[in-house]
Image (cartoon, rainbow over all chains, first blue to last red; front, side, top):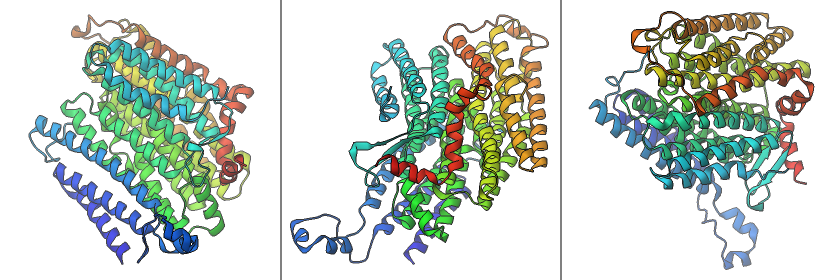
Amino acid sequence: MPYALCFLLFMLGLYCAVVKKNMVKIVIGIMVMECAVNLFLIMLGYRSGGTAPIIDKGQLEAGMEQFISSSVDPLPQALVLTAIVISLGSLALMISICIRVYEKYGTFDITQIRRLKG
Amino acid sequence: MRIPLPLFIAVPLVMAFLLPMFGRKGKTAATVLANLVTVLLLVFALASIGKTEVYEVGKWSIPLGINLVLDGLSSLLLLAISVVSAAAMLFSARYMERYTAKTKYLSLFLLMVAGMNGVVLSGDIFNLFVFLEIASLASYALVGFGCEHEELEASFKYMVLGTIASIFILFAIALTYGNTGTLNMAYISKAIQDSGLNAGLKFALALFIAGFGLKAALVPFHAWLPDAHPSAPAPISAMLSGVLIKSLGVYSLVRVIFNVFGVSVSVSWVLVALGVLSMVIGVFLAVGQWDFKRLLAYHSISQMGYVILGIGIGALILARNGKVEWAALAILGGLFHLVNHAVFKSLLFLTSGSVEMATGTRQLKEMGGLVERLPFTRTTCTVASASIAGIPPFNGFWSKLILVVAAIQAGFLYLAVVTVIVSLVTLISFLKIQRYVFLGELPENLQQTKENKGTMLVAMVFLACLCVLMGLLVLVPGLKQSILDPAVQVLTDGLKYSADVTEVLL
């Protein structure tokens, strides 16, 4: 069920990016997609009732098997951190290009920003 | 000489962050340094030919750590990237003088090179994604570098589609991780061989094809390319068409399909279909163009079709357990055309930049009779046009010949016919360029046009010489065995990749 909702979020973002005419809304749609994928990555590593993947003294004494069977997967969290940084970079670049386009054309409407064709 | 693999990424990356510090006054020093870096990378790439190496970053053994893998395919791509970037960097030394903020341009350029080198060397699929994003972000910024109306529009369009492609790829990586529990390509491949493809992995493969297909601008996904490539400054167009779509799109696609997921008949047909569509639609859209660089951009789509078609036929033969030699020939044609296209298309974009700088226009109808005014540009442009149209003895002829022979041998007679017809239409559109740019009447306002001298000329002549000489890569057995054959073998060996990578360590 959470996976289905996550996929729905992804499709909503894709719909928004493809259908909307306003540049800023397209950017928002893309970021919704990005969030959906990040959420999906986090869910991959999650197990209900799991603990944080940090080994402390008590766990060492209790034995590694118990730790492995109870902790969540730390790798997707590292991936999501990286992915968030990347998406932040592309968000900044996209928004700055939107601002420059607005300065030149005076509009955010992509149907009116069409000098390139052929 | 052993070159430590991280240097391929670290050298341009470090320089990319150092160069903006030079500011406006140190522009010349920054240009010289950036050129030194690209030449150094070329030397590294030449030194790494024929080597197979696995490097573990930070001594963490795989699958715990990240690894860099150098094999035949990677070193072929490294060679193409470094040749084109050296030429484009030399060209921009003079060409970019008319733009402000040249040091920022150089820095973005090197960032893009670092990203591409990272993509072709990475043995970890998430690491590949990170480098892919580095190269893509640098290229989005470079497409909009002029900050004029068209450039910003093209950059936004490119960026939206490029980011959607990246998200598809990230989603596919997440699905792959969820189903195999590892991110190392060799171990993913091993897990897939053990347990087979389930529905999730099949969906991941489809997403990979869509994502990398968008990056490679194959035909249903090609909408951004004809806007983005012409809008960039000429050396960047040369880089984008020459190597970016290849290393980010074709290389990654081929690596994932052949070495990680393994070829199957249905996927091979998808490749062949994408190839034929790109080839035919790209060339027919190109013929009608009147903008010099836009015409070249459409040809990039068409020529990428050749590459994918060759590789697709090879995959089909492999998937049907046909003769490995036939598959190897088709893949050889595809990969050889990839390298050839890198050289002649970047040369064409550089000559278009030279013409644009001399005349101030890109419209074919506003030019004419430039043969006496721009003799060197004309000669190099003719060499490149002959190569792309497949006229012997230039390099394009040999790769197209191999593709046609491979298609006939594999029993796809109609594909061979399509290849030849597309080649003829390519010839027509390049005759059009010759006719409208260099022959005919010289318009009044272009009487004072002068040839571009200096580094621009050197870069163009360098690539033109390569166009003439690259036929030797298949004709001389020694060169073929050391450069092209290892790359082909990586693909024909397919899933042996995982064993190769994991066993090199032991």
